[in-house]
Length: 357
Image 1 (spheres, rainbow, N blue to C red):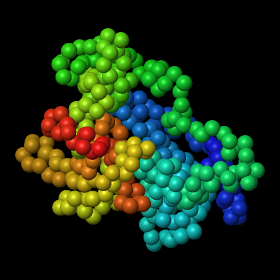
Image 2 (image 1 turned 60 degrees about the vertical axis):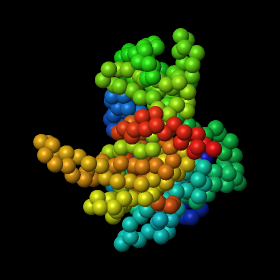
Image 3 (image 1 turned 45 degrees about the vertical axis):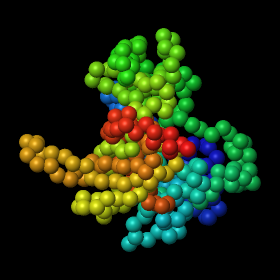
Image 4 (image 1 turned 45 degrees about the horizontal axis):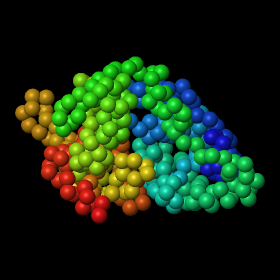
């Protein structure tokens, strides 16, 4: 157990229902091999991955889940995540002949289904989220009433799974694991070299780039891991930072691929978010196209998606996850490979400001 208020209250609620509860910690060695090393490799390739999603799908709800269910003989595992399933917060609606769905939590501000978007349906069948039907305030009230006032007052844990928040910042933290690979900082508009950076792994799309030699407010528009160049534009609302669609690969569908995409004949209308604190945005998903090895013909590729957003998107970042929803149901997620044409290229700069109005 983490010792935080959410996991503590989850355990207390289960005890109140007469369940036999045992606290267990997760294996750090599995995290190192399944999450942290791939994380470093992705950063070296110029990507910006989301390790918390893989921490859940490869460690908490895979290796740890199998250890509890198969080795220890547990009936289920319970966590303090703000999420729900169609089997109920305590598994009270579980049925062997029905599939289980991952649902958004009642507290939408704390919803964590984003980070659970690659957890398998088979694992979710034996998972409970006791606080998923509550608000954070109610969870803290229960903690105080149950005698856990000190825990209720503890500062909430933040940062990357198993790593936490680093005072010096993640850029400096990763310096211990990734060697410096200096490259140029290039003005996208003029092609002029403005300075040098220590490595593409230290920057992400949309990030502010402070330069002592330039007093403009510069932001990363895109990176080139091959040439080690970072391209910047002036202003946080520069049209080169915005697009209306993106491409994604390796889709993971919790309950199987949606019927609309199964044969590539239809589009899937749903909602998505690319960061956990962003609003859910309507979108249309189509299958991407791939070519045979000899490029003789193209075919619908089930492993590649084209996602068209109803609203302009800022700083779409390769390596991040797009998580898809239909109403309260989390469908799954896919990994962003590249952004579509930006608004500067498309001559749509005015749409950025129209959308903000």
